[in-house]
Amino acid sequence: MIDRPGLAAFLRRRRESLQPEDVGLPRGHRRRTSGLRREEVAALCHMSTDYYARLERERGPQPSEQMIASIAQGLHLSLDERDHLFRLAGHHPPVRGADSDHVNPGMLRILDRLDDTPAEIVTELGETLCQSPLGVALTGDTTGFTGPARSSGYRWFTDPATRRLYAPEDHRFLSRMYASGLRGILALRGPASRAAHLADLLLAQSAEFRALWEDHEIGIHPHETKRFVHPELGRLELNCQRLLDPQQSHSLMVYTAVPGSESHEKLQLLSVIGTQTVRSDG
Image (tube, rainbow, N blue to C red; front, side):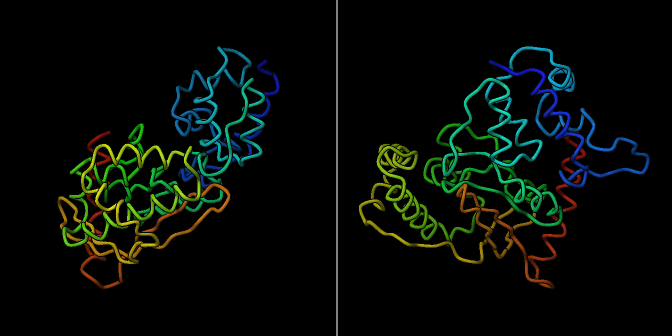
């Protein structure tokens, strides 16, 4: 059963305890609210302000599990806080670990501050959970895929558009890397895992993947330098640093360029292009 008073009180307390800079929002000069405004939380949680306000007022229908998960992420809740929120809303908490899409709030706080470089948080299967604005400008929004296409490795073998983002001379290596990585995750997670399901799908759909799978390669790790091909700026050589959350098997990937290099100049141009794109879409 939903605990409406408890849910409302918990949401209000968490909203009031957060500051705009905690979630990557500008504070503004005339701000009087001590914490976040309801409309700010609603935007972070991808819902209407009216819907969120009704929850804080103990009204409205019981929120779905998907809606509660979105609120938990938008409010930067810890796993314990997320599980508590689910129980208040009358739902069983989701699983923890590799299959969880809930991003550690500390990792989110780091991402929120990376507004001058491409960055993304991904699962062990290459599913993008969130991106910095420059991350979207570099590769497009990769958070909207559904089903097996959420995995970058699955898209690599099934969607030609994915390969156009990377230098052609790296394609063979990347194919081997994706097949090797999926084999390693399958061995770790077992035959009933999502990794096993992806492998079965790719074996049925991709002749290239089937040939690589027969090689049984393991331990092929990404190169530190990745060569992207941007549709407007051309080639960018970016170093990739990875921060791992061992509890959730999520990685924060940050892409930087050597100062003074051509790619560094293009990255600065990318920030302008990305800003103009956001403004024109708005």
